[in-house]
Image 1 (cartoon, rainbow, N blue to C red):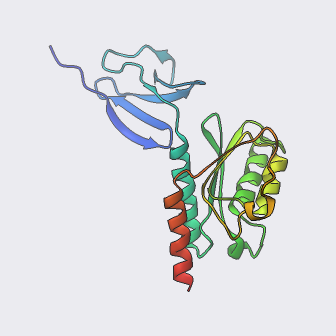
Image 2: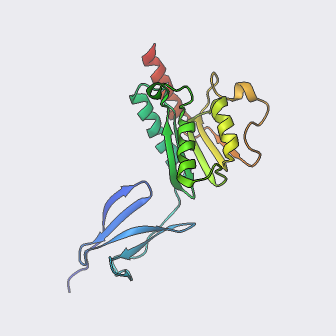
Image 3: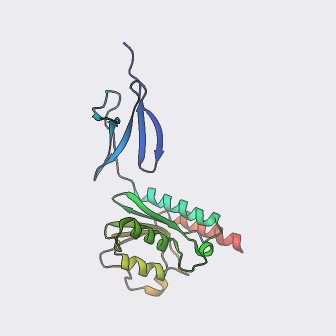
Length: 206
């Protein structure tokens, strides 16, 4: 009896993974659920039960560290373009809806911070001026301007990496809480990597 072919991993892109069974030539694609990502065998005509070599696979939700790593990639884009390396990612239900990086020099606009660009993109994507279900990941503590924008956005969570003692909001707003009362704040995630990118940038500028 011929042994059934094993599924092979084709690609991984953020939270999407595709599997294929060579014996039947069909692929697995992810279908999101509130808690897990479930893989089903799909064809162009109908949903088929999985063959014995392609059982449903369950993956744990994406982590904060995962999204901060993606924010770091946005910050690296800024670095490569000669901008202060700050990046931002906005998610809802663990799906990325917007991203941004500093483009102050590129756009000749002092308000073109990563957070502002990401927020504007999220508003346009959702067709809504508020983001009560969103989490915003930022590589560096937001400045006073971006803090105000985050306040008015009514975001659910804000997670940032490195502190910014010179330009961050804290040196102006402390001891007050400048964000929306319902917003949860977490900081220090991947702070060493986020901070090192800033140090490397300003070292090159000296």
